[in-house]
Amino acid sequence: MSTKLATQSTANPNATLDTVYSYTTSFPDYGIITMYSDGENLIGLSLPSQQYRLDTDSNEIIDKKLPIFKTTEKWLKDYFAGKNPAKIPPIRFIGTPFRQKVWQALLDIPHGQLITYGDLAKKLFPNDANTGIRARAIGGAVGHNPIPVIVPCHRVIGANKNLTGYTGGLAVKVKLLTLEGVDMEPLKWPKRTTKNTF
Image 1 (tube, rainbow, N blue to C red):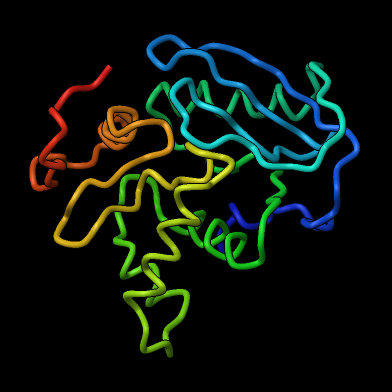
Image 2: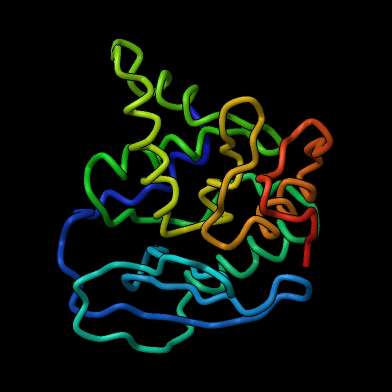
């Protein structure tokens, strides 16, 4: 069993949160990042150019630096310095059971390695004949990953080594993969996207 799975919270993932805590910090070359917590676990992380934001039914968001934010900030500093932190901060997924299953599977993708949506579908649903349909559904779940970078949705690519979108923007995805030592040369860029990073 992966050591990363041991940090998954056992709290009810579908419980309504009365209060969500947030803390914003910044990292050179990566910009402002906001972290969200239920008070004990990391439940969200927002990148500067992120398309989707944390979706909760919380009545209140309080800006407060909690121990979980200190732990997460240390993890991010190490990761952005080119290290492969052995253990992720305690996390709690909030979402549908299907999305939670996909997000959990993302934690099994090793640092510096890639997987396609199709292969992820086969891994999660090995006896399902509708792999193509599942792959598209998985793409939707991956695109709504509430904890990018730490839950490595950037390691998922399209068929035929196609670089696909990323919640923080394709340039961020490329930067993260390059940081992990992934050979970017064989990967194919979308036709309407230029090969730039920030």
